[in-house]
Image (cartoon, rainbow, N blue to C red; front, side, top):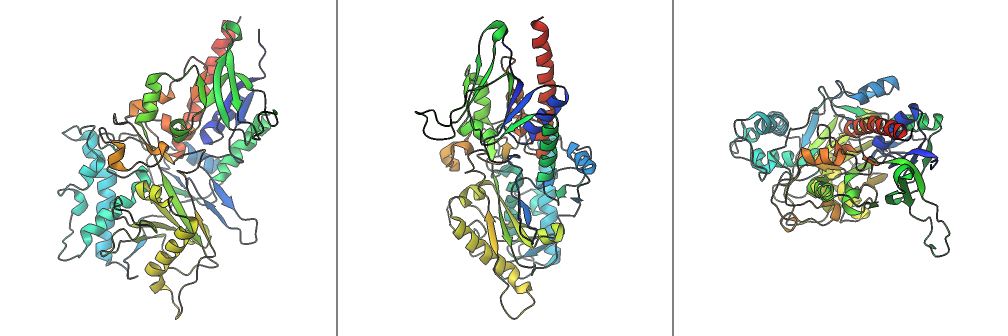
Length: 510
């Protein structure tokens, strides 16, 4: 009988794979984690300066969404890490002239947008008298003329208020990862969110990744970086059946064998790569994934959220938690990137004041959905110049000096769609029946089938195959997709399933 060195190989060193590896090691299993990047964490990515300035920023995940009952809240507490409970609605709202928007109007805008997007449309979709069609996009409900989005907004009293409120609603596409025209209204609010405020990981999300890595290594688990998995297959028969995992050669000189590595072998494999990778560049599976599995991969959408982080020698802006910029009525897509496109719709800017929240003199601009995809078509230089110009235009008049505000010392631009090992940020449920041509899909990972996505696709993606292939990731959690805690919970779930499967395998060999 074959004697395998590993019980489990985990493909992907994001939080789902790491917590699964940790829990299996604690159960006494031999585990190998293979990560394609030169770091762990996946879409959790904290960058840190080794200079005296102590700069750090999260390029990926930032928040613990819903702190009551959330497993991440307990981890943060156990690790003695700070969480910011700052009210993100306590924001300064500015127009393109750099003037603060009337406080009463700003209050109405904020109330209408958050209540409409996060309450009334969710309640109507899930508990309303009419069941939405799967072909109905979220935009139909949000921008319905009778929507609460427009409550108390008289264009005569508040000029451009409808433009502002609609652009603010679209700025929340960082939450959905996709434009509201692509998101299914039927399944909006289907998930079970944790209660309570959101908390910002003010010390950096990498602290949780460091803790998991430390626990894995203490338990003598193996972690290998720069190991991109190209094939996952079941080999052998009967009692000798097992999983074989092949990685990409380290050099292009495959003919000479340089950089080649013998395939890794184990009883079971846990595939925890992102949905975007399964869509655009998955490993080769043998046996092939069944048609229903491929259909679910294609049905779900992979959204994107990018950030532009502008760092300065010292803060010069107001001391609000964050800022909202409303678009220019004469150029409504001025906040959508340095390049114009007829496909873009007006969006406001959602910006976090890192100085207020973390003590780092920087501003972090969140850009999601179609605008985030569009942004990746521009160069870093183009984006940097445009973003710095917008900061100067909108916040410059608040600078208490006769001169212009200082230029940023550095601008960091994320490109999660173009990242080969993520191909996007997180999953969402697309509406049924729209074509890729009509929505302007420009990247394979951004595509989805006309069938539309549903929570059942998450359930399908979580099902083991042949008792050898197991799957984790936020896209496998119908109640907690598109979140760090969803990814975490999926890893906990799969570790328990794998342990049961290993016990069954051992008993079958007796």
